[in-house]
Length: 234
Length: 180
Image (cartoon, rainbow over all chains, first blue to last red):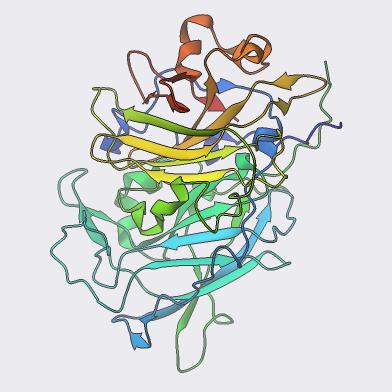
């Protein structure tokens, strides 16, 4: 059989290192040995198949049972391509976030901010044939964490992507434009390349904005592309 | 023009909002895997950090071939499990078959594992092989691992189809993590 085409290696400057001293939790959790580079096999170039029948879509986080969540309603949308600009269709996108007060619907989150019974804070959508996705939510609030004195996470939404290869699996965070906390955030700043960091910041988008209803934010994501270099078989 | 892949960011401590505990059972009713013939196994392990402390907020995902060695066959080999208060995860699945490797190579049966957690900027990836499997001796990936550390990829049997593989993120006995 023919070999699966591997994914291109990640560019280290555009990714956060596992050892990021300013983010305290990495200290005891990052491997000290270098990762072992292996040739990609079917294990890495294939991926789970998800579909809407088995994994129902939930594209509106702004209400529960018809009751509106508190906060500023937003629409988030964008396009998922690979590094060569090819649209990635059928990507399962998982989303989770804090509520407008900066609190997660999660038992371990003890931040002294109110929970909202009408905000669960999770969504699941799939990209269309052109790689596009969108969902409705509430603009999350900033919240404190204990990384350093007076530490606050910038406003963010978590994204998990399942592409066509296990090697493409990615979890990332989307930030909001103009957030003053971005300059102070060690997680955001762990990625060395400035342009790569800025691609994590969504853009206000008037075309996505729905009149009399909600502001739109555009957030495009890029999954690893296939390596064009033919692999020499032994 | 090439745009590099989006930067990974940590899953953080609150990823459980996308936890669906039933996903740890790949043989659950409604999984589509109920009718697939194969050897039922469990894969259990404990994740610890550089101090040997349990990682209690980890997200573990697995991806494996079916008993027929296929990723695109009848068996859907994806699972997700949250670690518990002792850092443990547990999957119920079928033992994968041998899988084609590059060229004419054959890979020994194995389960790919991804670990996400607070403090992991990007998930780490490893594999669980099955101790005692004859094909392990010629597996092209295991062959790249220095012998002294190879055991960190070998799940051990404890009878009745139960297999155990602990994952150490850092320090003594650190698991071999793969750059895929």
